[in-house]
Length: 103
Image 1 (cartoon, rainbow, N blue to C red):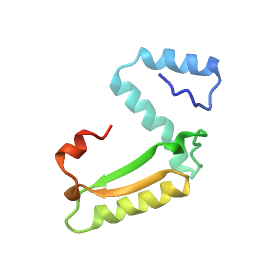
Image 2: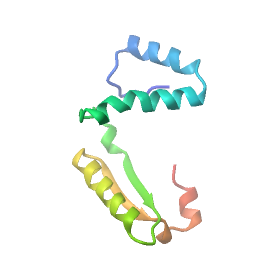
Image 3: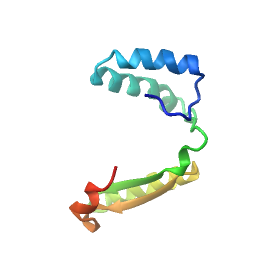
Image 4: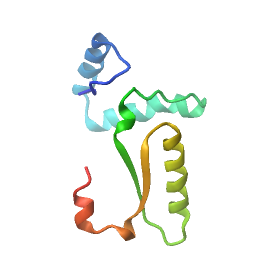
């Protein structure tokens, strides 16, 4: 369940996986938000496992006023500083067929 690249030991990964596999998707989602909250509130840097930045990151936005495009650009800029290969894409410029190919 956890990625091969992880900040946790094999024993810790086993404990986490045993906890998560016995929870509902709603419980897992809630835990994700709960665990990420302290980092956001206290401005703690979020650890990025080595190698995770090799995956491209696309931020799709739809906008009429330009607000969400501006937010997407800010998000891309921030993630690039973390080493990600990020780009903002306006959904008006993408066909439904192209979106289907996105995983």
